[in-house]
Length: 315
Image (cartoon, rainbow, N blue to C red; front, side, top):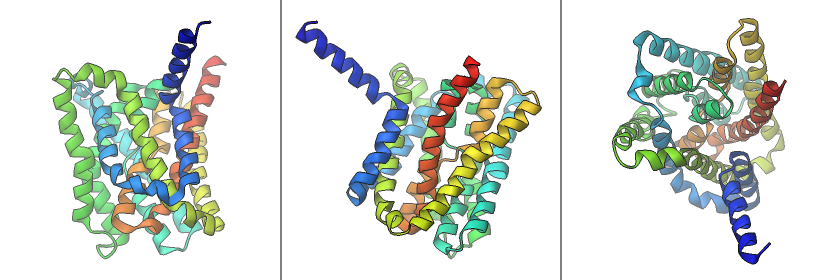
């Protein structure tokens, strides 16, 4: 092998590694722990990074996906049921049972009120799920979150804790603006390159948020290992535990494999990155600790799902 061939091979492997979702997310976790507060200096990039990820994810939704109407309404209803009643309800119950810290409770309430993670869309594709169901459900959940998230926050926490207008402003930046921009991209020459790099952009955006949130909360977690274990248990039950129950129920109901994959993602994956970044910006580090730890468990769970569904398909 010549030096040129060796160099090209090394560059190819590096490019593959940079686009490997699991390697990227695990690396972001590790760097957040290693760098600590130093990584937090990049936190100002969280909001634009999440908006960018949301924009490119929504470019995958075309007008054909929004017909017929009854199919759209059914998908949105399923998304709301799984995201808020199942996953959100589980987080509220776990938070009430396992923690008495007011700041941690605030973080978990806002996580429960948060829509499903936009990772539901790319992971539905990667894991062989029903991508159309994931797209429509996620879009519907995010649009209703403009009302539901501030409403639930005020009902459960009160206006003294969270200012609805500030929360709505953040949601507009993370939902409405990306939705409008995605429509512009889909009718522009940018559509093809954005589609080609969609997964990479989303992965790097997630990695940035994980890096900064974990870094900012590292010292707090290390000082209070019992708190970390409690929040890790919340994350474990709301992802692995809830996912196991949902899979059993959906198999019993004889739901098709693609729909089962997407339904499980909708019922277990919250937008922990958005919650952690939003809570950090609006309420401070302590309140963001819960979403940050659940974010870690979610990353681990997504890695597990890749292995689990690959084995299931092989079997």
